[in-house]
Image 1 (cartoon, rainbow, N blue to C red):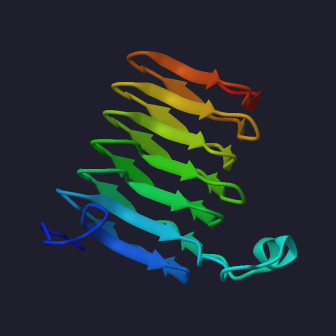
Image 2: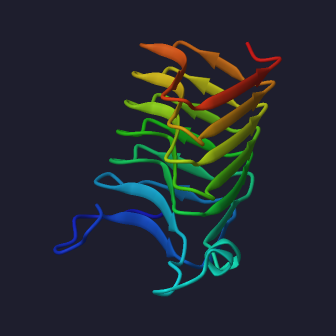
Length: 187
């Protein structure tokens, strides 16, 4: 069990787990961060004056969450992926986040989730924006107080395959501002 409390002088809210440009693997963990995000992964920023090729191929943050991981009652997002992070999440459960379950932001960011259950987020169970991408297979998105799955902004995309989306207070799936979402065999 990983827990956090309020820290003075932090830029972001307190994080239970923060990975800044590294590679992180979580295996069979229960994470609870009452005042902040559960897991935050940021890509390592390229140096000043970097070429487009260096930016594209440069080091990025990576996250692997293996079956048995749980994020419960986080005071922010369950998992926040920023600025080019690649994340693979399998067989994990997320329950009762104050903001979004998964929040995927930034060009090059990619979430691949399989057989996950995201339930009871006060915001959205999954949010993809700012040219991020998400691919969910056999996931259950339920009981969101906001939107089950949200995809917004030009260059942003979300692919849902064999997913169940149910009991969202506002909308099951919300696509806006030029984003692209594809759903296959979802209920």
